[in-house]
Image 1 (cartoon, protein in one colour):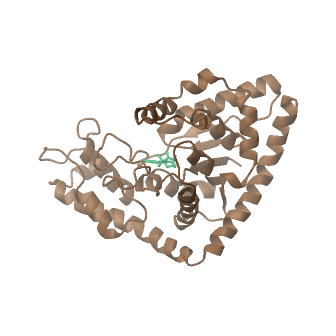
Image 2 (cartoon, rainbow, N blue to C red; image 1 turned 45 degrees about the vertical axis):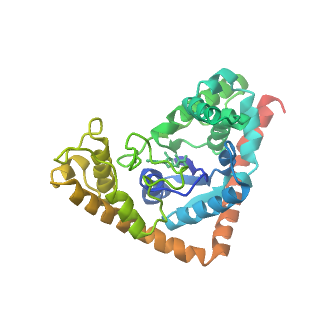
Image 3 (cartoon, rainbow, N blue to C red; image 1 turned 90 degrees about the horizontal axis):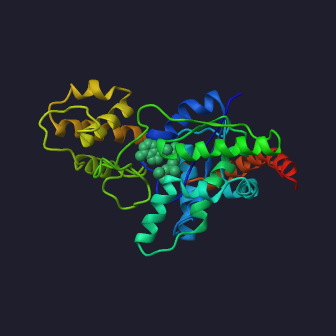
Amino acid sequence: MTRVFSGVKPTGHLTLGNYLGAMRQWAAVDQHRAESLFCIVDLHALTVDHDPARVRRLSRQAATLLLAAGLDPELCTVFVQSHVDEHARLSYVLECVATDGEMRRMIQYKEKAARERARGGSVRLSLLTYPVLMAADILAYGADEVPVGDDQAQHVELTRDLAVRFNQRYGYTFVVPRATVPHVGARVMNLQEPLAKMGKSDDSGPGIVYLLDEPEVVRRKIMRAVTDSGRDVVYDREARPGPANLLEILASCTGGNPSELSGVYESYGALKKDTAEAVVEVLRPVQETHKELCTDPGYVEGVLRDGAERARAMARPTVDAAYRAIGL
Ligand code: ADP
């Protein structure tokens, strides 16, 4: 059976981008068709300035939201990365296969390191080695497929390189995975800056819809979305990124097609109104289930404990084999 691994970073509250681009697909498709592991990758949240209590809180919240979004612990494995030592164990071994030049070439490292330095901060070494830990996350489970947004494609490519190199040098140990980039909704953009991805790190951003935003807040953010001075509603990602983003969000929520939908609307106001309502409806069941789950934190704890146990049992043989192969 195909094995799928994917994760979310607890660096902020989960967004509509995380939901439409990833979680919804995991729940509706992946967990039914493949042996799936979904991980709250908390070790990755430590690569930039962080507040320990907040990371812990956000990890728990992310787990609760994954379950609220429909991940079923009977069908898939939901767990927290730091609960399974195999990730860090394997990461070190892979650091002995990767090169520093390879790490420094990663686009995300270059961008994030530049931002950090521009703010006068220092760059944590873990930011540089982050892709190796991500490779370990994937290779430890022998995952065949890694559903990720295109921002992560380069890291999956590196994971493949490391797996192939390790296998060639030390004998076949790792399945070589491939990235699968989702469908419509793969790139939800910021409502205020439609050329930037709707990322979760800016917590107060008016351009970001969070999964736990109240309906009124969702409506306000979408009604204030940046469009342009055009009079007609046209679907053109390059020339009209703001309206295109709204059309894609609406299409993704209603199962429609953005370019067909553009013909239905004569004004941005009407498009925004319908988009807002569609988002509110998509979020409603997730928010309701989240609320219920919050009344039973013991349940979520139990799911994460079982998940870690299952994950450990899957990862250990591969990581042990890698240790033997490399001479330990
Ligand atoms: P973030 O960029 O929010 O920190 P994560 O690294 O936690 O995201 O990603 C979790 C999943 O959500 C990944 O599969 C990622 O590709 C997807 N994702 C995140 N933001 C968006 C977005 N704006 N549009 C589509 N998918 C997204």
